[in-house]
Image 1 (cartoon, helix red, strand yellow):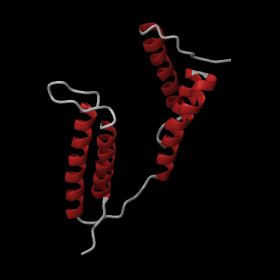
Image 2 (image 1 turned 180 degrees about the horizontal axis):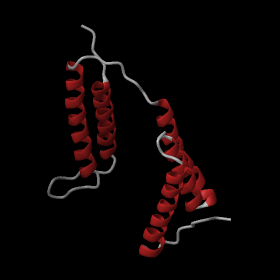
Image 3 (image 1 turned 90 degrees about the horizontal axis):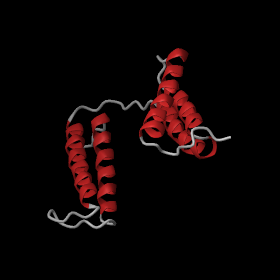
Image 4 (image 1 turned 30 degrees about the vertical axis):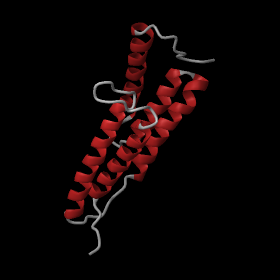
Length: 146
């Protein structure tokens, strides 16, 4: 009998792999005990929970009927580019330009978001970041680098 792959089976496998990686990395931080928790105790618990959740979802997916998996490559690529562009732009040009480019790329991933809404997303995110980090936390964030 050949395994039937569908969205739930693949999602369960990915969750289990992420949980296993988190569990593995948790041992680098020192686990401790329930009475005296180390810095790796919580990541160990979360990783273990992800492994269990992924196993339950994956096994349920293998029992269901097989449906072809459609991967939205355009959206996946644009969201990944949005995150990567933020990481590359923030150190060289500042927070606002990084938010602007990242926001535009993320909005391009949704075909229903127009230019007016994209501008709104960028302006709102810049305003929110300014209020939280500069006003609220008094952080010396470089908003725009020249």
